[in-house]
Image (cartoon, rainbow, N blue to C red; front, side, top):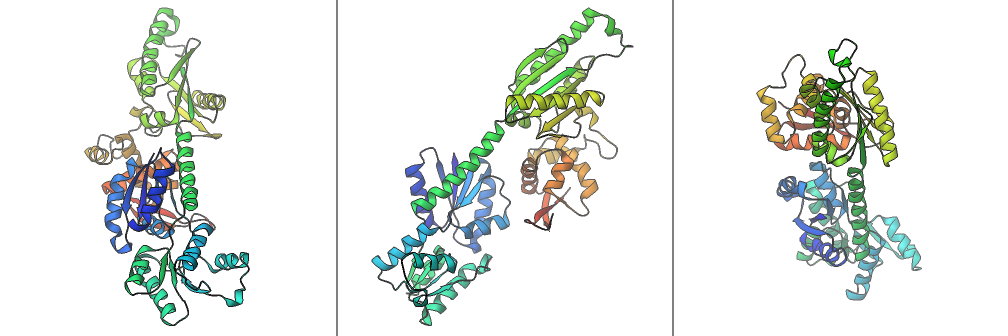
Length: 440
């Protein structure tokens, strides 16, 4: 695994050393993030390097908040949480190493209740304790200055005997002014908890990507007026031509093929490979390949599942939908939900802009997205661009997953063909979601 570590050099050293010692399968790349004033260089570097990372670990919650407020990151990420082990370690350092009075101090990384609970555990009376906690609503470029000012004020007024901070820049500024201060370093336990959480996220995605996908295909039978219908030789010849296209497509998606009867096929592949070849099921090449190179068309059902049995059942549901709707199309079935019909590429062209428009080719080359995908996004843009659209709404219109759509959106944003217009609440509860505007 390739993991990026983002944070101040002082804290990154602890995280990186612990990972190298305990996780031999992880390669780490350190990305310096000193403070919010210098975040632009970090963001630019991160945008370019994101594709090579399996995940990101931030050295604390503040770098995580600042970077994520400025950049949409779709790969797994976590930050080292300030848990009880870090608090205990810092308190021991204060009493044993520095001989500070731990009954009065200022702190910017813990809430008061957690600290008081710790004192309760060691039998100290709360009435003897004077703890000053920094406000939680300080963000962005004011963070270092305001936290430094907070600690200085408490110390200079004689309210706090020393300061505890989880922010390296605050620590360095207080040290420069000779104010007693301790920087809270992540413990091995805190680092392990964060890394284990990140690995679990990465493995969950890999498990999803390797999910079995079954494609159930049936040659659409000729109607009674087709001259081939009564010619067994011609039927077998056409079946051979269809099979040639089927096996070519199977090779592209690295699928195992089983021929069922005289006009049915089943393919077994993985989600990751299939969606990579088909641009997340936007275009199924086998449909146009068969219709262009044979006298027949094909109906296709694509089934996802946690087991081969579930995927096969869902593929049968999708095939039945394709046959019922008249054939020459595909339907995918995932978690009991049947997708919108997927037609051969030749049927994508509609009134208005043509799929052969040179602009779409330019956008496709700049973003790495297929021309078919760009054209489909253009059709959605014509309906939604006045008010903007969320990634979820785009995914629903597009017919793919929200995760897949987020990947497409990031490519468009990086190339300058989309921008974030704001945020919208999709329900009374939950977090607001981004509003995207396509720009071409």
